[in-house]
Structures are given as C-alpha cells and as structure tokens.
Image (cartoon, rainbow, N blue to C red; front, side, top):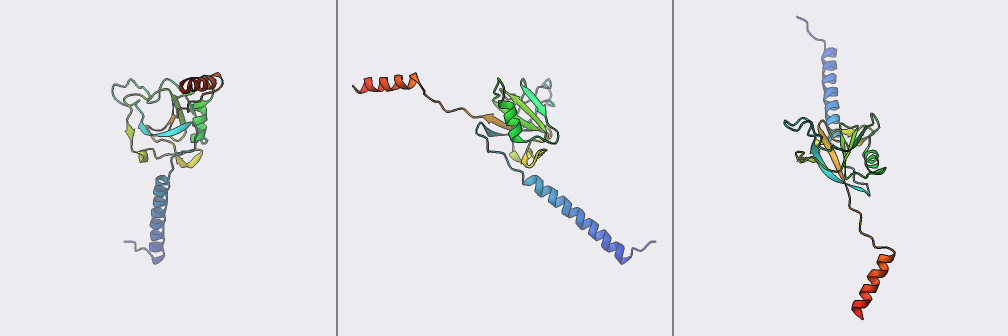
Length: 167
C-alpha cells in the first residue's frame, strides 16, 4: 500500500480547494447577469421557452416568421435590437438565444410560455455581463409603442376646434 507523503496530501487539498473556488466563481458569474434595459425602442418582455421541441409544435419557433442572425463571439442585446429594428420592417419582438442567436418576429407563438428570468442564464458572447437566453430559452424584448404626436395641419385643426368650442 502506498502512503501519500505530506507534500502530496497538501497538493491534493490545494487542488480540491482550487476546484471549489472555480465552481463558486462560475456560479457567481452566472447569477450576476443583468437584463439589458437601455433601449429607447425596446423594453424587456421576459424569458420565454423555445417551442421547436414541444410535441405537436411542428418545430415552430417561439419567434417565427421573421428574420434571424447568428454572431458567434460578438452578439450583444443592442446588436440584436438594432438588427430587428433596421430596414423596411421593424419587428415587434427581438429575442436572444444560445448567447449568440438573434430572432426577430411580429409575434410570439401561443405555445411559448413566460419563464422565470433566471432561466435565461447564458451570458451574451459579446458582453458576458448581460443575459442572452439559454438552451431553448429566449431573452425577449418588445418594441415600445411610440408616443402619439400631433404635428402640422393637425395641430391647427385641434386649435381651431378648441376655439370653436370656447366661442
């Protein structure tokens, strides 16, 4: 029988302690992810499940019928929101999945359900402090409704109508 030397026992304890420190640091990093809330166009809507694996879904996506892009090592929430709101079509929903995928759609599939926000626990590949969905889970943002503005001739019509009521 081999008896470990005091040096080997100490080395073994140090390796175990180091492994525990790495595990604790990884757990803290994932629990400290933030939800991006700095967009003027989109507001955070919640964490939703992907629907492609649900029996009977015919592999329909939670955010289907729109566009998507994958940015390995680069994806951030602002990048996805810009992608979903640029061009001729401004998509109502933007969702991030797998830390690198961006999905844009006008609607969320009815079979997709809202989950606890902590289930969208993958850091964005382009910003490791922000949540970007998870495996089969999407961090979803919804386009904010623009405030109604009255300009030009409509202002004059409103002023004229108000004066007519007063006189």
